[in-house]
Amino acid sequence: MERRYAVGIDLGGTNVRAALGDDRGNVLARVEERTERRRGPEGIVKQLARMVLAVTSELGLERIEGVGVASAGTLDPERKIIKVFANLPFNEIPIVDPLERELKVPVKLLNDCSTAVVGEKTFGAGRDFENLVYITISTGIGGGVYVDGHLLFGKDGNAHEVGHMTIDMEGRLLCGCGKRGHWEAYCSGENIPNYARLLLHGREEEFEESMLSKIVGGDIRNLTAKSIYDAAKLGDPLSLRIVEHVGRANAIGFSNVVNLYDPELITVGGTVALKNPRLVIEPIRKHLPEYALNRVPEIMITPLGGDAVLYGALAIVFKEVV
Ligand SMILES: [Zn+2]
Image 1 (spheres, rainbow, N blue to C red):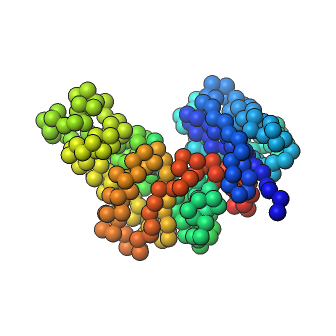
Image 2 (image 1 turned 60 degrees about the vertical axis):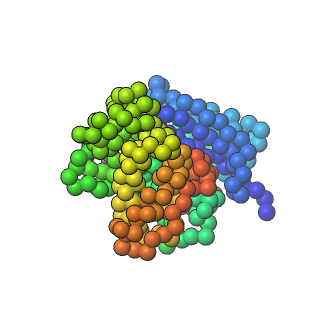
Image 3 (image 1 turned 90 degrees about the vertical axis):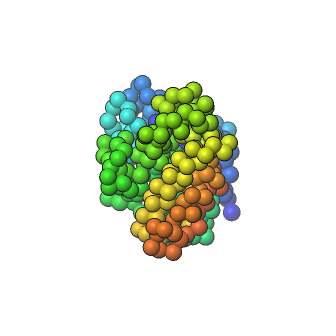
């Protein structure tokens, strides 16, 4: 059978990546750049078009079936425009129409976590599963979901903002979205330090004597998710306790996902999980049965690593999901 080709784009607030690939999951060329934030929506479209031309320069643009764009942020109801995107100084980024005009190939747009679960189902660990969830634990927390073989969208394609489910009714921590008590406010890479400071409140002496304190120069304000996981890996008891608390909060988030969607498999990606696979996954596996009503699914790090979104962006061109 003849090979089919597409370009997938993973558009994030900091970096944008584009890859030329085929329908068997082979990546043939790829480029990565800082996201063009200074030239308005047109600047981003021009950047994407340029990157598509770069990765197709050898094969030829006319050989690809289309371009799949996976974006951070939320989309409009038609899934053609990015509405809210990583605190950029402009509100809307029309993607599909201007990019199709520029490149003269079909363009599809989907949010990044939905795209990642399509990547998992097409090229990753989810090939044999009809009920599948992908969760990213990165700067934020997000998810993509298949139930009975159907990708779930929601009315605007923005379903499964799982990071913003409430896991703490006391609302002790404020989420980046402005609401209190959300999962992401406790367990995302950005917010794990806030949760750590909450846990360490009144335990300053213990902190001062810890290895974690040495790593961050004695200043609790300098905590990062990386410093906490690094200290935990070195056996620092205080950091291991923080990691355990984060893991329990993650287990509550995962249990809600399990109770809602009843997946057979949950794959996990995102920087925090990929860099600390054991310290992230094991506490979730351990505590999940305490909270899940439904049968506990298999939970594993995505075999697609940091490329789950990029593979998904290729897959949405080949598959009729969008
Ligand atoms: Zn939130």
